[in-house]
Amino acid sequence: MLNGLWLGFFLVAAVSALAQWLLAGNAGIFAAMVESIFAMAKLSVEVMVLLFGTLTLWLGFLKIAEKAGIVEWLAKVLGPLFARLMPEVPPGHPALGLITMNFAANALGLDNAATPIGLKAMRALQELNPSSTTATNAQILFLVLNASSLTLLPVTIFMYRAQQGAPDPTMVFLPILLATSASTLVGLLSVAVMQRLRLWDPVVLAYLVPGALLLGAFMAFLGTLSAAALASLSSILGNLTLFGVIILFLLVGALKRVKVYEAFVEGAKEGFDVAKSLLPYLVAMLVAVGVLRASGALEIALDGIRHAVNWMGLDTRFVEGLPTALVKPFSGSAARAMLIETMQTQGVDSFPALVAATIQGSTETTFYVLAVYFGAVGIQRVRHAVGCALLAELSGVIAAIFVCYWFFA
Image (tube, rainbow, N blue to C red; front, top):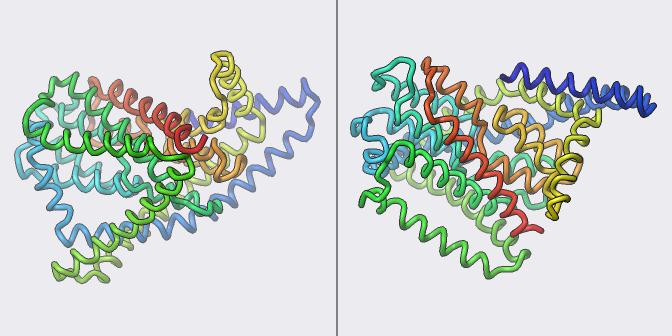
């Protein structure tokens, strides 16, 4: 899948460049493409320097949380809910703890760290699978919720914005929170319909209703604020939440007599190992996206979408942020490259860049997740997983666009 996508970027760029040279007489197009290749390679290294620090930092804190029992406590708290949503998984099964850790990593925006944990969870669920090739209901629910990208603290998005010079990297905190809530809710409801889960069960309602009411009340409160006040509140809550999580992990670790420094270093080493493997992928995708943009092919595609949106009488400012959404289902690294490229060309705090950042933080790489998670355990018949995951992703994209108009337009 990624091979075809990556090769396709270069082939489309080559066709577009030839057309501009032969039909429009633009002989400088090839020089621009070559210049873009080296510029994107340099940018990849600059981004990786900060990514090394971010992943190392947050996996260090996550290790403290794990040793302090916070993850285990979350597994116990969510146990009754999982018992209803995944009735085939026995109470106390290791899969539940791994699923909780995966959700915790996703919630902190550590998508690269969440993947290895998620693979362990999928293998644990496969141990309960009576079929070696057909996905169980529990595996599908786990994958769809994973693909819906419930991100409460999008640290990596803040990092990318900071690296591109954003004066307030956390400004997109609330838009991402609202958009990812929409994608997760749609993902859960779609799976519930397909699997006939009893969401009206008193235990399930006890978990979901208070959260839904709280989110509804919060959105009603946000509706009373001006755009400037919304941006300011998003910044305050983003920074406060970020620092609050760090202090919480450290205090609980200290109370549990965890050697917090040693635990942090242990987790940070894992973060370093995860981060160092990402540079080749980042270079590959950023270079491909840079060539696509320099060839004019990306602009041609966006012009087509822009004309269609304009024909419907809608505002077209969000269109420049759509490249991230178009490639996100296939590749996280490609979407990351599109986001960085949009911030570079449009400006880090431009409306398209804010839309792209919100989309990146509230959606997941559906086909990649399907291929990796199910491929790791030999699942061939995925049943309704693809449809539910894509519906959740589409909901996240639409919600991201609407929320950005609410906050920033």
